[in-house]
Image (cartoon, rainbow, N blue to C red):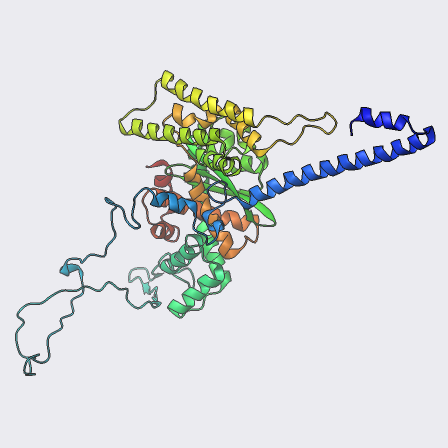
Length: 490
């Protein structure tokens, strides 16, 4: 009922009754207002929960493994391109091929009896043969080498001199560099926990090894990498472009592993998710190049140029499409993909930049779609009593796209900059596998010890070295020249 009509009716009642009715009506109106406010809050909460349930690897930062057994849309989209499963034309295969006979162990097999009459053929000469090769490994067994340092007496002065033991014979009974390399490789590169590594070595070699001994092996390997950490930090501070990322791990509670990733180098550091850890890591405070990252606010606190990961933004836009089916989001998503394709074509043609007018046209189209999005998702105005109102995720995304337009399009202006931060994400992804297998690090210190070795192996593999051979350098006294070559390319 309209307030004027209600007042007209109440005016016809006796004053005492009218006052009571006014109080009752006021209470009812307040209850209705509270009910409506509760309904709006619940509706908003339902939308937020539905958006969370609809998150997957296509529209969020969740890994594909979290999508579950249901077939993802990504697979369906790929199949629509007409490509059959398996290797594509031009893909370099890895089919097992025969090697020259000189490289193989020869075993001859002669017929014993005639397949026609059964006569003995053992004395008959060969009339030719067919070849088949079996690739296998010899039986794995531990080999014990006893080193004897003999003594001899000088015939001239009578002084007795003893021979020298090799560097690996540091005690009466020790594990050699090959075994220590294999054990450390299993733990630091293949991510096996101590217990499973000890079980593997016991099963294959028949030699029980304690988890404490395995921990000592990793400590020994890590101690060889002090100069690597110092040099790699200085090297990264001279990089023109580097990717940065972080991920949560369990180590004395919640901790974060940070990564700096270049085309030929990797560095990790474990701590908290703040400026203190990023400063202690030692790279960003002196970094003057272009930092590629995922819009974490702390990165913008460092005095360098920035570039945002467009793979993250494409997933954010996909979330908007899934939730609102907005046309602007589809167009902006396609625009970013098309710019990336144009940059790739230009690079293939030997170009190192677009013209300023070409860049301006792309940026204008970009801002047009962002502005259209802001018209559909404007800011929520507050009532001035409870502080700034909470904005929607879509509005916050649009504001970031507007405020950081230059950082989003950095790959357009500078061809050295990648479209995304996938390199850093790939480097740090294996830590999630480590957490799934082992669960946690016992401490920040043990975590950083593991990450130091992991950074060394990642750097070596990026430059074409075998991770196993790189690990072996740590146990054979060849660390320093190898590290210098890895870091500086000497």
